[in-house]
Image (cartoon, rainbow, N blue to C red; front, side, top):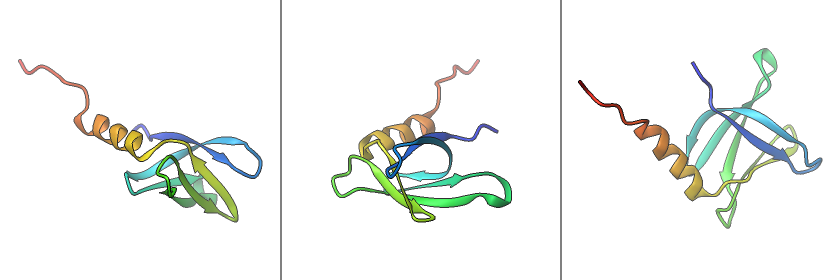
Length: 87
């Protein structure tokens, strides 16, 4: 099973990190930070302008720099998948 991963930025340090996507919808993206018993879920919601998603985990703000439209396009692309011919 291939887990979808996205890159988020910690605004305080500017550090980017790859996180695993737990669920993705245009109005909310849930990600998992860490692994095993030390993993933490974070909910990213669209910013007021809709140009990014933001959330916080353990007092740190995380930002995913994609718009709602881009996320919806990603979801649609995964949902339809590659076209396969039936023989």
